[in-house]
Amino acid sequence: MEGLVIKKNANLFSVEEFSTGQVFLRHASGKTEESGVYVGDKVQFDESITKVEKRKNVLIRPPLANLDKLFIVISPIPKPDLLLVDKLIVYCFVKGIEPILVVNKTDKASETFVKNIKNIYNKVAEVILTSAKEGNAQALSEKIEGVCAFAGQSAVGKSSLVNCLFSQNLAKVGSLSSKIDRGKQTTRMVQLFKIGKGYIADTAGFSMLSLSFVTDLEPRELSSYYPDFLKARANCKYRSCLHEGGDCGVIKAVKEKKINEERYQNYLKILQELKERKKY
Ligand SMILES: Nc1nc2c(ncn2[C@@H]2O[C@H](COP(=O)(O)OP(=O)(O)OP(=O)(O)O)[C@@H](O)[C@H]2O)c(=O)[nH]1
Ligand SMILES: [Mg+2]
Ligand SMILES: [Zn+2]
Image 1: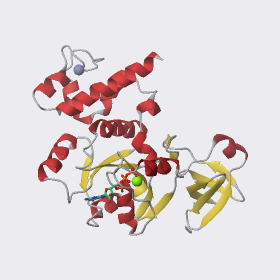
Image 2: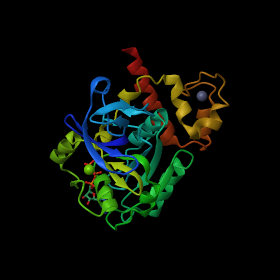
Image 3: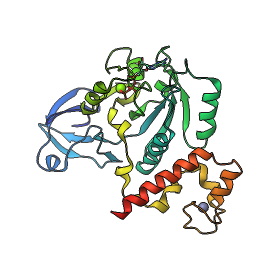
């Protein structure tokens, strides 16, 4: 039989069989035990899991395989951490995941706030609007396809959106300042919940994302994951330009306001992180 691993609990995996949707509890065995089985894996199984199909991507923290879409949630309060957003977007493009920017708490967001976010990201990722408080997650549920997960800083409303999508209390909604809650959530197991055409994983681990995952990313490759820099890059004097100075098309475009200043400043910060990592 063939199926999708939707849950891992200690050594036991829940495998949803493709044709019937029936869920089986299975252990890994032999080779698959050695190489590891992740939630999101497509597997062959009988009495145990016998084969893991080739993965499109695999994330270590949170442990998840074959992620198709990442919903990066921001809100007016807490103020968006756009450096985190930009890191997550780079991460998605490196891993072959579609990033979708979700502006939640639209009940609290000004028109200017929404417009600004749309302006910054219009060439980069789709931007959709939700309000978990008002029960408005329509735009989000329409986007769910394949294996999807939420990411974003604490208290933007990720769990609330998951609750909203299922209209039941599957995820624990915490308060803005509840640190203990956050600690608990990071250790929680990963599980996929079926919804519409796909699955959702509520994975708090993403909020702590550092670029340590993409150690294989060379500093000079970074800007190739910036679709909004693409046109301007053609005007750099050197093909190996890191866009830090000199005769640089990206810097020119920033001055001409064709590239968003904050996107560029955060690009430099991520570039610095990648360079420093290379030293070790
Ligand atoms: N006004 C308003 N408040 C919201 C909305 N969505 C969530 N909240 C509130 O924001 C707070 C944080 O929501 P959570 O869903 O726990 O946030 P989270 O992103 O899961 O946070 P962590 O689990 O810590 O990463 C709660 O008090 C929610 O009630 C919304 O659309 N509008
Ligand atoms: Mg949460
Ligand atoms: Zn340049």
